Image (cartoon, protein in one colour):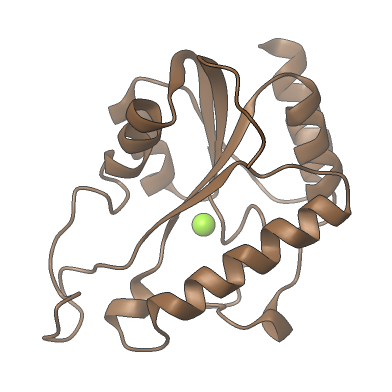
Length: 173
Ligand SMILES: [Mg+2]
């Protein structure tokens, strides 16, 4: 990874519904439908000097629909696709747990699972990133709740052109 200036603010992006269409636990490359405008939107966030970090609940692991290795491979591929489009994604965080799914080792509550704040806090602590100026874009109320718990603005994407949506956020920021 390229060297990272300290104390950047971050645009936290939900994955399913923001980066790619939420087709119901998408986990294969063939299933990926990028949200229209997402690459220009990420380039716009990069140009604004923001880190871009993905925070995604992946209860499909707990539900035994796919495993963590598949999540990892998909995220590597997504980062490569973005890079090929001139867009930089700085990192992916996911939560494989679900409190009510199955009886396996992933079937438990986790502070990292949104609306929990764990994934955001881990990024802020370990990257490191600045809370001031950071925000989250998601498509569900659980995303908004996680942002609120982190003390950062949450922006609910209503669908449509996400580049126009991001452009509007940066103008008013
Ligand atoms: Mg979502």
